[in-house]
Length: 277
Length: 93
Image (cartoon, rainbow over all chains, first blue to last red; front, side, top):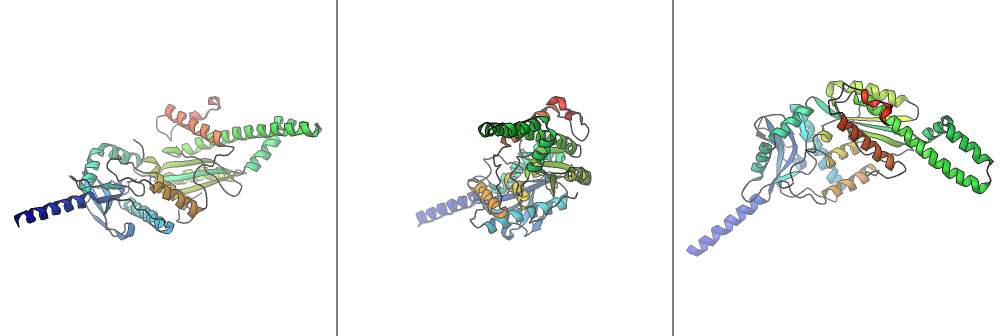
């Protein structure tokens, strides 16, 4: 009888340990607030979102098992991602400054330490770094700026303005077929080179003009663009929230240039300016 | 011009940020997310009908050079922003 009881309690302990290991906290963001509050059931899949404070900052979390949210259903994933963003937005609006985390960041518990304690300890350990990041983004928002050009338009322009290209084109007309083919290849290379030089000039020009209105800039990889356009610039700009209209005016000027167009998005929480060390 | 932000037109911009960026937590505290970024990529491709990776075309080298230029430039101009404009001299090219 006594032995059975002992075994029974052992099993209980094992179960309790397992339960701690398997719990986690989904972290949405770190906010510039000392409050310990519930924000209601606005989390992923209706989870209750609340804060875990440490000194004058807090992590915004919900309780979850220590396993990533995964699904093959894209609508489901899309809904999760949108909800993540809605929570970050709500916190941003409430407390003015947030350090957003990317989707699906879950702090786990350990055998000896609960997930909640791990969140607290993380805030404690990283406190100085988090505070300094909060300082860097306070009062600012992130804006996306993408500049496109029409490569056909740019190439035509070059053909008209570059004497080297014009001469080569003239020469081709006088050459016999086989030789003309080789000249055309040379022309192709020349146009490509000059296009790159031109894109370079545009990039540096636009970069300088945009830089004046941004507190910080990240240059992102350019992407494939549709509709016969080519993206020559993809920036994330950290801008004082009351100064974005000046950036907008500068972008207007670029957008009005023939053969160029600008895409201006935001305001986003400062996702691109809180990563790294 | 005014910045745009709505769930349809700027979905890709949102995904770029929410899936790839944000504050980093040291790896030993967070659960392994192997496979999750893949979901992100598939999701983006399917939802937005566009490729998310840089499609290396004629401008590949140019793109890399440009970003290298910017990062060099960043090192040389550590002071904050908004004030100076002197770096844009063509002599640096």
